[in-house]
Image 1 (cartoon, helix red, strand yellow):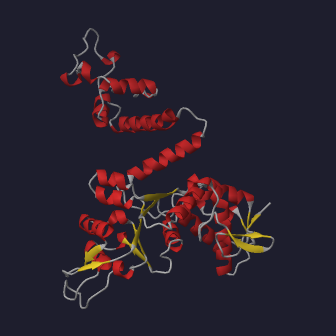
Image 2: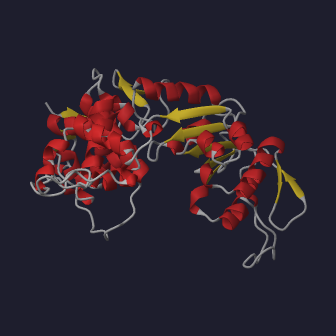
Image 3: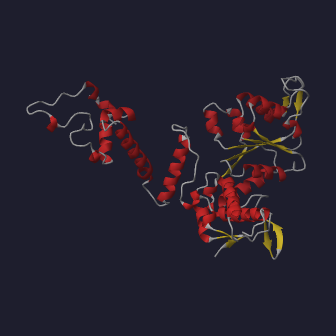
Length: 405
């Protein structure tokens, strides 16, 4: 049976009871879902909003951090004051400093007049600093001062200005890890991290996928004057099982695409993009040797492996690490013409270790053709003239006991 939206049209956070729309106290404006993970976010947000504390919202790109920031402001005593948003990752250091703190006429090329910064504009209200991990060390010092003292100077000005504004920050990085590597000030991290709000990725709250799909389906059907209001069960199953690396933003785009390209009153499997239907998504050709985010690929590989293994699996190491290790050794052996000395050096491991791995992964069974070099680079014994002794091992092949792992 197709799934159909039955909530109040266009009003997230409300539901029907006896034909009337009432506010749902367990929800936040614009935040859709009822999973336990999301409800924890709602509870934390409602508790921290009335306070004066800084709020740090942590979550992957596309999880809805700005919605939570807006909810913190709207539910606070500052709701009647200004709400100012700044994307710290969208501007260079000099432009961001001027944007945040303002500047004086003539303080730099192009400063043709005095300008009020975003902190001044947010006086008595809230300022939302998105992607705060993108700020430079110099700006982090000034931000720390605003947080602690509530004061700053405009660029090119010696007069100190006082400001009363609440800072809400967001990041898609682990700021503690960033501080440990020296990219983010530790004192600023602890000053911001008074009340952290962790927004889980969509793959960790799959119960929320269906209401999100139905909400976006209604929105885009109305915007594009389409009759599509239902979702075929198989299409919904595929949507629920997708890992959503782009989170809610990715889901939103796929639903909009389905509404625009679909022809019926029901969202069907064929309306979904290829990657949801088990097909490879078309990608532009990239030059050989193009850079790839190895860390992201590893993260996705592990995620897919854990998911494929299932919750009851107890052999994740062999399933994931073992397969990657076997594939790596196999490819390096092929590149080194199955010469084990070369392959071990390329891998950065001891030759005896490689020999054991070959036996463990049964890769030695696929040895070189008859008459070719064997794994250690020497010919087979039967290829030697009769009576000739085997050559001594090369000095480069000798190995100390402590090299064995």
